[in-house]
Every structure is written in C-alpha cells, then in structure tokens.
Length: 116
Image (cartoon, rainbow, N blue to C red; front, side, top):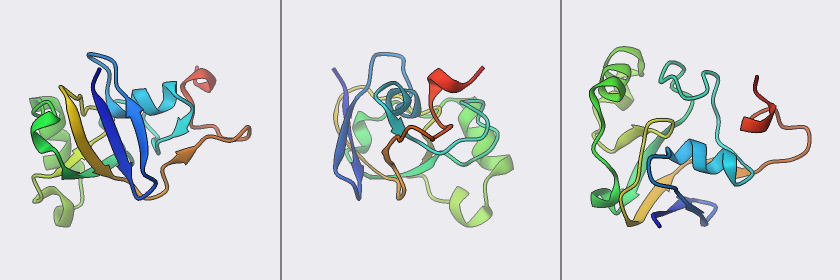
C-alpha cells in the first residue's frame, strides 16, 4: 500500500489506490486544510513534495489548470507544489511538507464525516 510521510510532523499516512492524500488524511482522522473538499478550487490544500517525487502520480490536466489559473504566481512556478486533494500516490517514499497538518480534535469541522 502506498505510504506518505508528512513533514514537519513526521506522521505517515497509508493511501488507498485511487485515493488522494487529503482524502487519506481525513479518513485516518487528520486535519488537511480545505474549503472546497477536493474540487481543486480553494488552493488551501496545496503541499510541497520534499522527497520521493517518483512515488507521486503525475498531475492530471484538472489539477494543472487549477494551479495555473488559481494559485498564487509565486507558488505555481514550482513543479513540486501539488494539490493534496488531487495528489495520488503510486508507491512508498513520498515526503510532503504541510505545516499545520495534525490529528483532528472533536471540534474540528475539517473531517469527511462532518461534511454534507
């Protein structure tokens, strides 16, 4: 099963086939920032690949367009910036940087079980 390490927390996530990194985080009880719940619209879920780039499934046109047209110009020029709501994993060894990533608490509204 693909596995991702999130820095600086050092937390490892198992990612199911076809599942995005953000979906894996929500499923396992972690907060991954979002306002659009996987629609590649809010850019809140962006992350930076630190290591293991070959374990990341290449971005599809939908994600590339979202980055190109919606993301801050400073960030969109970096090919290692990806949207966690679209980022899928094909193997082990992917390391991502996402400050603020953490275990969810009872009052967090950033969990898949609480969206309607």
